[in-house]
Image (cartoon, rainbow, N blue to C red):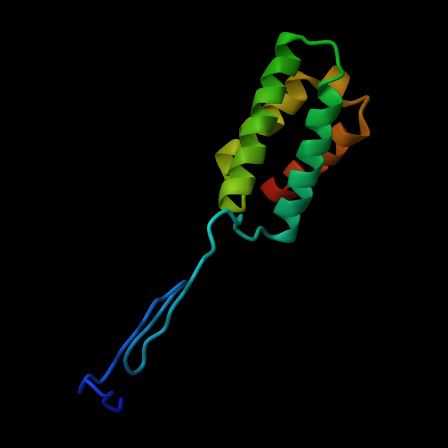
Length: 124
């Protein structure tokens, strides 16, 4: 129970920065803006591999398959960074794009890493 101040008021707050809860049995959850959701380790591994492959593909000779794969990789990176995980549909599209660009992807260690991470998340 609050005690009264010299004006007879029970509560006086001058200024507040950040989350506040007043009263019994209250809780405050504060999520600082700009932080990405925590992803599971398999998704984190996929994110690292996706970034490496995107970097490698930026130096490859462009073809329709490489362009499509680059787009899928960019979308997967954004989805994982924003939500913490790539959805099953995204993983399936990524697997298809990897297969379509197989000649180039097969030459890159980063391509093998993405292929393995996607296969693990899709269950095979």
